[in-house]
Image (cartoon, rainbow, N blue to C red; front, side, top):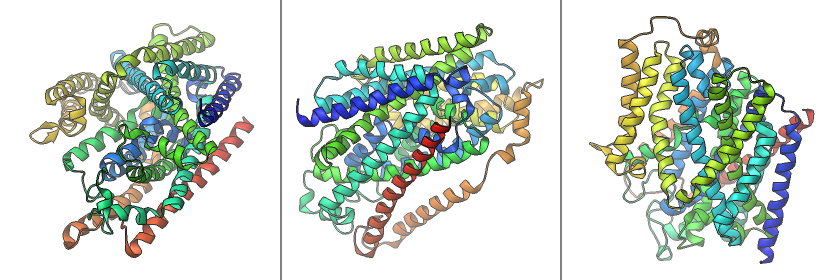
Amino acid sequence: MSNETLVILIVMAIYIAGLLLIGFRMSKQIKTLDDYILAGRNLPWYVLSLTFAAAVANTATVMGQPGFAYSIGFTYVFWSSLSSETISVLLLSRIGVRLRSMNLTTISDLANARFGNSRRLEIVLSLWQVVWGIFIVGMSLFGVSLVLEVIIGVPWQYTIAPIAIITILYTMSGGLRAVVITDAAQMLIIVLGVGTLFFMITSKYGLFTDFLSKYVGDTGFNLTDASKGLTLFPGFTDLFTLPPGQTIMGLIAFIMATSFWIPIDLGFIQRSLAAKTLKDGRKSVYFYAMVDWFNAWILVLLGGFGAILLPGLINTDEVVIRLAREILPLVGAALVVTAVVSAAMSTISVYLNAGSGIIVKNIILRVKPNIGTKMELRLTRIITVAIGLLALGFTPFISNNGIVMAAVAMQIIMISALTPLVLLALYWKKTTEAAAFWGCIITSAATLFMMINVGGPYAASGGAGYFGIPVIFWSIALALVLYIGVSLINPEKRDVMSPECKAMFEQKSKLSSQKDLLVFGIIWGVLAAIGIYKKLSGGTKTAFPPLSGSGAWITNGVFYAMSLFTAGLCIFLTYRVYKHMRRN
C-alpha cells in the first residue's frame, strides 16, 4: 500500500468515526417519529440550505458533472444545472411551503389531507417513493464503492458492504438530526476542495481562458493542432453550441429528466417538511440554489481542464478524483476524495431515513395506529436497516447497468405522473381523487410502454419519441389530459379536503414570494438575448463566455468570484449550523 493511499484511508477513517459519533450523540435527542424523520420540525434555513445541497451532491453530481463536461462540452451540463436550480426555486419552494403549512409528515400524507383519506392513492405514492429511494441507495452504494476501487484498488464487491453498514448505523442512530449535521461538514469539504483544486490548476497551467484557447482557439471554434486526439470540438466551451449528433429536443428532454424530479423527491420533500417556519423553508431553497449552481460551474470548468490534462479516460467520471490526486497536496487530495465518498454516503442516508419514515407513517401506522412512540421508533430503525440491505442486494444488477436503466425509467415515469399530480393537487381545487389515482396509474403504465417502444430508458431520456417529440412530452401531456379531464367529467360530490388543506388554499397567495420569478426571469432573459444576438449577428463565431480580448478577463473574474463566494457562503452557513448544534 502506497503512502498516498494510506493517508487517504486515515483521513476517511477519521471522517467516518466522526459520523458515527454524531449519530450516537444525536440519538439521545430522538423521542418521537417526528424527531427521527423530521428533526422535530425545527431546522432553520441555514441548516436546510446545506442539507438540500448535500442531497444532490452525490457521486453522480460531484463526479458526473465534470465527467459529462469532459465528454460532450459545457452546454448540456450548464443548461441542466440552471434548469435544476430554476425548478428547485420556483417549484420546490412553493410545493414544500404548501405541504409544510398543512403539517404533513411525508409527501404521501397529501393523499389524506387533499383527497379525503384516500388509502389507495396513499399506497401508490408511498410505493413510488420507497422503491425510488431503494434504487437511489443501491446506485449510491455502488458509486462510492467504485470510487474506492479507483483509489485503493480494492474491488467494489469488498467495500460496498462496510460502506452500507457504516451509513446505516449513523442514520438509524441519529435520524435526520445526524444527517443534516454531517451534510454541512460534507458540503464545506466539497466546496473548499473543488475551489482549491480550481485555483491550484489555474495557478499551475494558467487562467481558464488562456489555457483553453490554446486548444479551441481564441474564438472557441478554431481547433488547434494541440487538440488532436482529445474530446474537444468547435464550440466545446460555448453555452449555445450543441455537441455533435445532439438536437435541441434531446437537450430539452434531458433537462426535464434531470430537473423535474426534484419537487416530488422524498428526500427534498422531507427536508421541506422539517423547516422550522414557512419562511425558513423558502429561504433555504434560495441559498441552496446559489451554492449548488456556482459549485456546478466550477465542476464544469474542472471537466474542461481534465479533457486536456487527462486525455483518453475510459471512465470520464474519474476526472475530478484523478485531478485532485495529481494537483493537490496529499492531505488536500485525501479531503477531496473523502468528500466524494461522504457525498454518496449522505445521499444514502437521506433515502434510508425518508424511506423508512414513509413505510412506518403511511403503511404500518395505517394498519396499526396505536403501537406507541417507542415501537414507532424501533420499527423505523429496523426498516432503515431493511432498506439498506435490500438496496445492497441490488448491486450485482447495477454492475450490468440493469438497475441504472430501471432508475432512469422510474425517474421519467415519476416526472410524468407524479409532478403534474402534486402540482394540480396543491394548486387546483377541482382535482379529484379518482383523477389522481387513475391518472397516476395509466400515465405510469403508458410511459413505461412508450419507453420500451422507443428503445429503452436511455433513449427516452436522450430525446427519443414519436414524430420528433420526446417520450417525456407525450407522457406529461397524457397526465394533464387525464388529471384535468377526469376531474371535470366526474367532479367530487362531497367536500374531502382537510381543514389544513382548505386553509392552505385560502392563504396560498401569502405562502410564496414572487421575487424569485423576477430574478430567474432576468437570468433567463439575459441568456436568451445573448443567444439571439449570437444567432443573428453573423460573422465569425465566438464562444460565450468569451475566451479572448477584454471579455476573457470578465470570464476569469466571474469564475474566480463564483468560487470565492461559494466557499465564503458555505463557511458562513457551516458556522451557523455549528452554533445551532451547540444551542441544541
